[in-house]
Length: 103
Image (cartoon, rainbow, N blue to C red; front, side, top):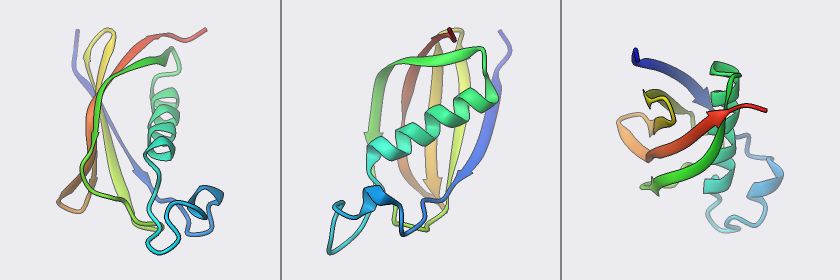
């Protein structure tokens, strides 16, 4: 299997509905929203695959609204994709997704 990598940018607007309660005094992008963006990028990059599980995932640093993050997806096995999300030189989140054929 050849290693393939896809990098894309994520920027959640400050008026996104999920930010209203997450958190009122210091808004941050919810991890679930970031994971959703990663799944969308995977679908755009590899429409033949879908996420079937999260093997492991760690959120290291909060991502602020309107802050740009780069997400790198790398196919490390036929059923495994490594993800790394960075904002500048800081790792925001990283982990592994299990993937399978898209329906």
